[in-house]
Length: 387
Ligand SMILES: Nc1ncnc2c1ncn2[C@@H]1O[C@H](COP(=O)(O)OP(=O)(O)O)[C@@H](O)[C@H]1O
Ligand SMILES: [Mg+2]
Image (cartoon, rainbow, N blue to C red):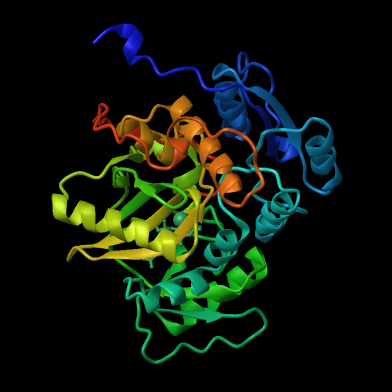
């Protein structure tokens, strides 16, 4: 085979409007910034620079309190597609679905998940109820709404983990989240109500491995390799869970050797069972674009669904993109596929005249590349990333 035949053709140049939180608007170059500073805007930086590298015309737009700037850009600059990196509006994560709805009403193709999927995946309890209908294993749970007395259902035994019913990014999750008495349960629920400001849920605590599975696609879903967060030298007396500290404190990650990488020593049957589950979960929750499903794998080999993350963290060195790379999808190709999926969905809905291009983003070739398989050091993430 010749080199020329191997090279993928440069995609058609598109006008891409990239929506982001104004605080995460990246500079033109990362030179001279510390790792900690870069961490704040690395996702936006990676996306903008990679899309430009692909030959697209890219306009970053910071939005948070006003929809008008989006409408103005859509009407005047006429982007072919909007890359949606917004995870909140008015500081409220649950409004991510409203922004997607607005883009839908403007009839502009946008990347990532549709508003229905964002809504179904947002409430952890609602997701679990929908999945229970399909007999997808998930830890038993109870929700403790704000302002109500904590009464544990008799059938929900200890140990339990207490978390926010709607927040992301391990907000409110620490070692103290795992409780083994009614007294500790009440204390931790009060902590979630008061400090996180949301309803709380207590879930059966699953001792086991921490597994993430990326899924890419709208109708036809491409599932990425089964990925694992490894807790390194974490003290045996600690619960091996992805606390906020584990996810976001780079010094702690480095000190303990907390890394993510392909899940090792799983039988091919178990791997494919987990991957099939991840796809079924995305279908049930009506997720499209790109998503990551979080599981706990118990010692007896049951993958328990924890939560689904539509529009997960897409920075180059984070789990989703690294798993894609391990599967032979390099970062520029990944972002190009995400754009194509946006356009394909809009076309299917009848509001994009744009040619979708090669493989229309739906499936396409599934290269068998194995990557190097080396676990990566976890970069420190900021607290409001969907991880
Ligand atoms: N039922 C559970 N059993 C064991 N660990 C859990 C359970 N629920 C959550 N965790 C731990 O807490 C982390 C964060 O929980 P998750 O439900 O994924 O919320 P978030 O949206 O904050 O990521 C998980 O990655 C896992 O390590
Ligand atoms: Mg999670």
